[in-house]
Length: 287
Ligand code: 13P
Image 1 (cartoon, protein in one colour):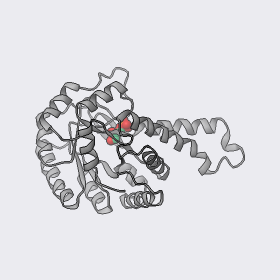
Image 2 (spheres, helix red, strand yellow):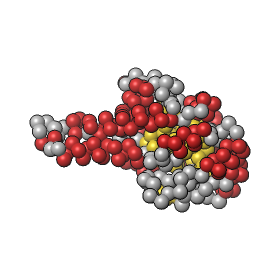
Image 3 (cartoon, helix red, strand yellow):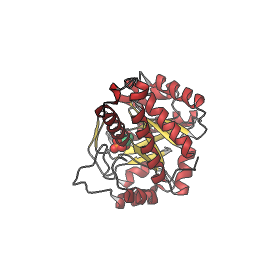
Image 4 (cartoon, protein in one colour):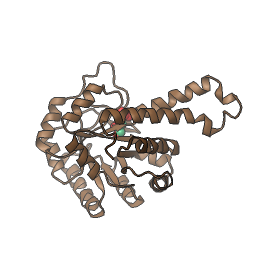
């Protein structure tokens, strides 16, 4: 079922677990994540960055593929199709294409402009029954050309954006997209705690889920994080499994070059990663 992320995230916040957002890149990625969510009876959010949307021939291609796949695979768990780090224009395109959820990342605008643009998009999403994520304090690292400085969000600004009626709020708390450097200082739980105290029942979003140690993930969930984004970890798992297949010369045996065989170990690796994250986040059997 393609649904907005609102109900699944409100339930997660109340139940003290988190729903995973796993970014998709192609048909195999999408299929692996949907099948795992169904097997684990877990709600799930499919994340699509603007770059991945372009790669997959546009947001409409993505939305139509996801809807058809949910139907053909008989997926009954709640699935949200969500624009990740959307621009103002990208958010509007995804709304038209049939996404059920968008993120408007206005964290690089001055706070007044972030507020004005977020407010307008909140109005549109409300009318259409879509969920909307906003961001305060840029997430560090680089994702599909979107580079953030790794700021720590100002809790008062978080409260201002939360009060606009967004569904969920991403706040920079020292998290970074991609692999964490060896000298990473860890998550700023003091900031997260202050944000949750000011924003109350608002589901909070933790970006940069790849490589955050399990104990930090659990602590973040206990402090109000209800959505955790994972992208790089699935890419690394896919690449490692594909490398192993090729290095073992399996593509040279029989019909091992058939893409349905060649990509199969990578798909299994994504499935294993998603399952592990769903268990860690506590979303198994919460569909
Ligand atoms: P990672 O690639 O670090 O897992 O981050 C994913 C993310 O935050 C998507 O918005």
